[in-house]
Image (cartoon, rainbow, N blue to C red; front, side):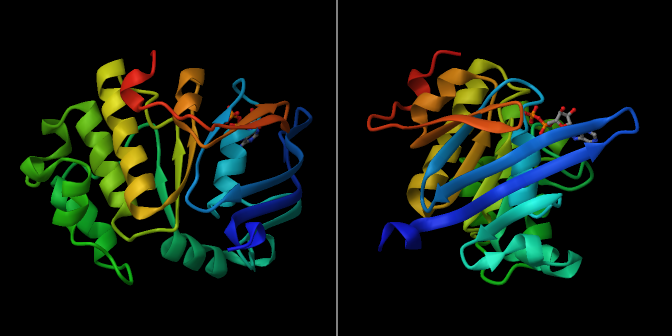
Length: 238
Ligand code: ADP
């Protein structure tokens, strides 16, 4: 594959301005970026520097004010709501800081919500095995630890075999031990399924397990680094 064929996302002058009444906030001030297939990319930068805004636009949850973003050949910035919904359903898994599981459904049923409507999904059992939760299939979220709940959320996100997995502070609510377990699952999904994975984090050490690290500052990309030697999640100093 040529380098261009390995580009999953490409942005050009991507801009997001929020008009808050009290003035305009340039959440993204013209971003030119490429993200690559099968890579695990970490986004770092101070709070308010635009990381979540970018992630939400890449995932079709939000719209840019100006500029362009492509998922492979599909220009997301040209799509209407229905097109964005289809893009999300077919290609994107999301993982958020606070899991967003349905409290009245078991782990298996939470994953089933997605597998019931996906085109070529794993079974809920396969997805939960992937995240090491085969022994928790019939537990409700309240019966699971924070790390286990996040692993259910990851199983739900990857069960439809999405090409990209977008994670906003996936370990933000976890202690170091369970945080490492969640990172190990993300790394395994990236390795085994080849899912292009983007992780926002405040823990700069997590960059050491990434293929690519992108630093944000004031709605701009400040610096991009690639890692030749990636460390295992268990080696991350929390
Ligand atoms: P980060 O993820 O790096 O913390 P965000 O992308 O969440 O940054 O936010 C970037 C900027 O956009 C911040 O100044 C934030 O306050 C602003 N912002 C984000 N969402 C909204 C919104 N819905 N309305 C107004 N301002 C917003």
